[in-house]
Structures are given as C-alpha cells and as structure tokens.
Length: 165
Image (cartoon, rainbow, N blue to C red; front, side, top):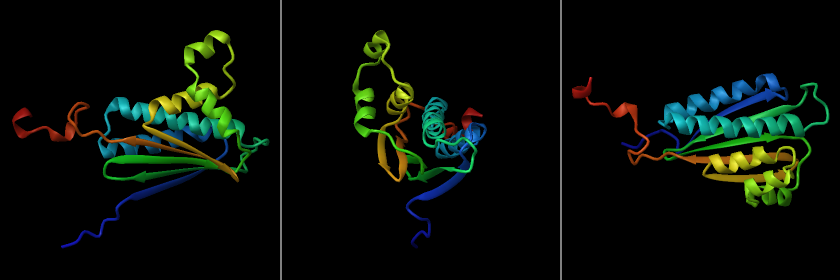
C-alpha cells in the first residue's frame, strides 16, 4: 500500500520585521529540528544560523523599522535534511561582497579590523550549516541546509532499548 505522506513537509511562518519576534523564529526551527532527531549541538547551530539570518533581514532589509514589512521563514522537512529559507522583500546586498567575506580567513579579517557590519553573521551561517545559498532580486533569500546524520555518532535518544530503562 502506497503512503499518502508527501516527500517533504513544509512549515511556514511570517513575522513582523521587528527584533522582538526573532525568538519565535528560533523556537520554530528548534522544535522542527528536535522532532527530526538532530542532536542538541546541531539544534543550537541551526538556531544560531537562523537567528543570524533573521537579524540580518530585520537590521538591513528595510529602511523603515515600523514593522509594516514581513520576514518569512519556511522549513522544508525531508527525511535526511532540514532546508530553511529566510526571506524578506527589502533592499538586497552584493553577493560578491558576501562571498568575499565568507572566504576570507576570519582571523585575518579580525586582525585587520576590517569586518564589515553583518560580516560575522554571514560567516557564522556558512560555518554552522552544511549548505548555504543566497538569492537576491526583489529582496533577499537565504537557503540553509543541515543534513541529518544517522550514523550513531550524534546519538539518538529515541533508540533506547527496554533493557536500558
């Protein structure tokens, strides 16, 4: 009998463009990642990356800070990975500048005191997630993927046998 379950579950959240709502975005991804079986450390990495992406959108996307603009968060839950998209409809940024910041060694940049505002956030997102793709156009979208590793290294508390209880 064929399963009626879709290949991917999609969870969407739209938030006002205000800092006080960023915790809601982190709570959403934390809950989804926990349900999928990510380790505590991986969940913290995902929350930090999403927090940085959302903070960048709130701080840099819109000239106005009145909250009339929206921040969109979409989680695509696959069997082997979590794909998270954070997008806004605000002003974009240079993909080339972002890539330059991400490929420059962090210590070199910090020693020269040339880290641009937002540069550390982009570096963190890249370092914490397995795949990161930026899209610009009518706003900015950041797609971040974290693969679920089921090799036993991270551990999975759902595999406790009755003998261990």
